[in-house]
Amino acid sequence: MSDPLTHQPTELATLLAGRIADEQARLRLFADYRERKAPHTVRRQRAALRLFGEYLAEAGLSPGNVAEAVEAWRGLSWGIIAGFRQWLLGQGYSIGSVNVRLSTVRTYATLATQAGVIAPEQLLLIKSVRGYSRREAKHLDEQRAQAEQPCRRGHKAAAPLTLTQRQATTLRDNHPDTPQGRRDRLLLCLLLDHGLRCGEVGGLQVTDLDLTAGELRFYRPKVDKVQTHTLSRATRLAVAAYFEQDALPLGPLLRRSLKSGRLAAAAVAMSERAITARVGVLGRAILGLAGLSAHDCRHTWATLATRSGTPLDRLQDAGGWASPAMPLRYIEAAKIANQGVRLE
Image (cartoon, rainbow, N blue to C red; front, side, top):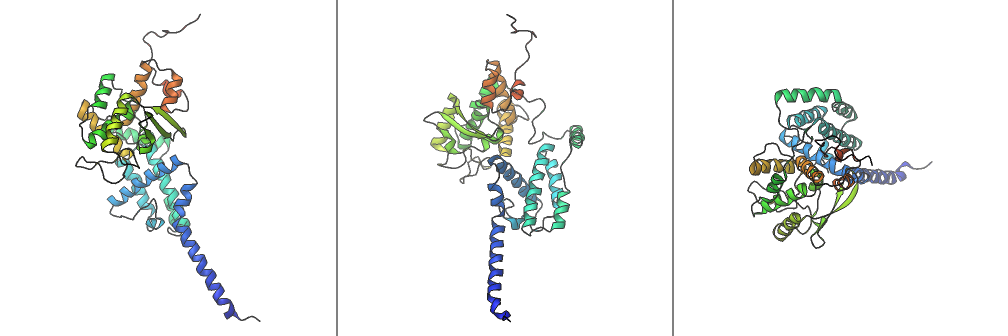
């Protein structure tokens, strides 16, 4: 008969090793999950978690970094998640954006449950806090219209605003020679001269611009491809001024600004939300237009390009569309319906 005491040290060592392994797995849980996801998915989820963190802070919960620390999810309940959904609606986000952000929160809550931070029964309740169906979204949008709720963030308006060439040039070029002004000028160049999406602009790094070659090389998440644009003359001038005085050696291209108008010393990028808000501020200040968005700038770029005779296939490639369906929307109907139609 073996002595049970002789097995005790081995069993304790195995138990201790298992606990250490479990703890290391918990610490790496979120990182391991993100390593298996596409870059654009990771960026979208990080943006959603930043918003979730803002909501928790406003609610006085201040849990910590919900994007990195699984322990930050301890104590989060279905009621808190339901409150987040309502908060997003109150902030003016589109139904589609609300649904996407809720999906991210549910995904990370599932991971936190796997780590033992959230109880399985609580996860079932959290998963019951779902987004809105198409029919529900229609009813909510009708209610918002009746209540005259402000424009919905993360939503492309049914009829985007198209600037004239003169308005676009004025908005692009009229900025003070200050750190914030030089950054704003570059921001508008990227939107109006290159037709970048808001998220694409926010994801740009300093190293994406090669001033010597006069090129911008960047990633387009919607079509999962890297593209190169030749810089317009206005963009080259804006880049040169910004690089000389304001840009950091490495990190995000467009730095967040402070209330004083100075740029943040740390390498903190402008978020999509900040870009949209800034375009709205500049549209009112420079052109006297209310509600101008980054998408309006992209719409203007595409519309002016088609008016100048840009072929559809070139517009599709330059704008980063997967099919011609979207750029076709920017081709205006001719006053004479059969103008340009050739039979011979």
